[in-house]
Amino acid sequence: MTHRYAAAALLASLAWLTPTAADAQDTNYWTAKYGTRAILLGGAVIGAPVDLSATFYNPGGIALGLEQDFFLTSKTFQFANIEVKNVAGEGLDFTSQQVGIIPSFVGGFLPRKWLGAENKLAYSLLQRFDSRFEVTTRTITSLDSIPGLGVGVDFFGEAAADSRRTETWGGVSWARKYGERLGLGATMYGAYRYERGRTQVLAEALTAADTGAVIVDINAFRYWNFRFVWKIGAMYTLDNFSFGLALTTPGLDLFGSGSAGLNQFVLAPDIPTDTVANRFVAVEREGSSTYKSPVSIGAGMAYEFSRTRVFGSAEWYNNVGPYDILDLEAFVGQTTGDTIQVTLVQELKSVVAWALGVQHKLSDKVSGYLSFAFDPATAPDSPGSRDATSVGNWDIHTITAGATFPAGSSELTLGLGFGWGNGTAEQLADFGNISGGDILPTAVQTPIDYTSLRFTIGFSI
View 1 (cartoon, rainbow, N blue to C red):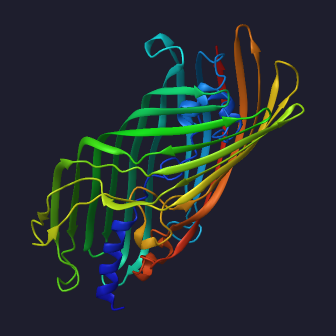
View 2 (view 1 turned 120 degrees about the vertical axis):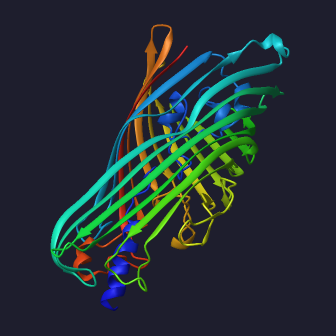
């Protein structure tokens, strides 16, 4: 690499230093659990009606013995730590620590007289995704020289990211019992999604001879979307055994809108124009939004012996995309003359999530729970195909333990969960090689470590 081209690579690679939102909920379908007992069982309840979370997991179970849960709500408090190692060079790690309340659930029964005594109606409101992520990184250093730029260099580089993502589902469920053992049901959800993201890069280099370069690279987007999703389920029970099947339809996109923009500014007056061209490109476009969620099929069972009940469930999710979330017009760069298409692409692969759980009756009114859940990453494995909203791939394993016991006229639930996982991401930069001018690695994979600690409290009446 010549000195001139090395300086060009330095400036161009700074545009890749912006971290993206490290959200383990949007690319892991089973991270959020719903209901009180269902949370303690790791979501392994597709084959058994344990509480009103059946409106989400398997509506067929609503018809089978949930009279006691007239109203149910729960909250889960989480501390999560996500570390991307060597993201900006050897020993330069990127860490995100998130503390807050993860997606919650509220549900209850509606009056039977609306559709007749043989039918059951219920409602539920849940947060499918809810995350916020912010990070700012800075590097201030002095270097003897940067090839192609000069000697005695003062260097400053900043990368800032902000991300907010929410998705709320609200719906009404219908279920009916056929004979003594079969329950069929369906839930119609309206799903509202909002997401925004902003990345910003500022880079400055000044030599002892008062020559230097500046680069600004800002990308931002926001959109909202509304769609319908249906859950259809069947559940069959025997004396000590039950099993169920549940289908989630693809989202029926209705309407939405959003905008995206970019601002790129490069000023390198002391570097020959045959290697780096000074440029200014700024655009913001508005248009309609489309959001696609996958079809999924789940199956589960539960078996009871003595004072113990064992649960197991698995769910297959189809792949999604790639597709453009926003429909935006192309733009011609002010100084480059290039046609620029601002895009926000989603692509998710097909995965199978599963969980195992155990309930043991400690007394007539007190039960203990223990579960394990595996939640695979949905971002594509190919680095060139990765979803634009994900930082990488990591699977999540979660162990949860807890108990339910009476508290006055209601049932109180307390639970504690620990999650962990690992995977890979693409290295964003190599700051250890600034002085060499070549700080943009090519398809270098770096490891990700994920841990979380959760405390759940809920009650049903």
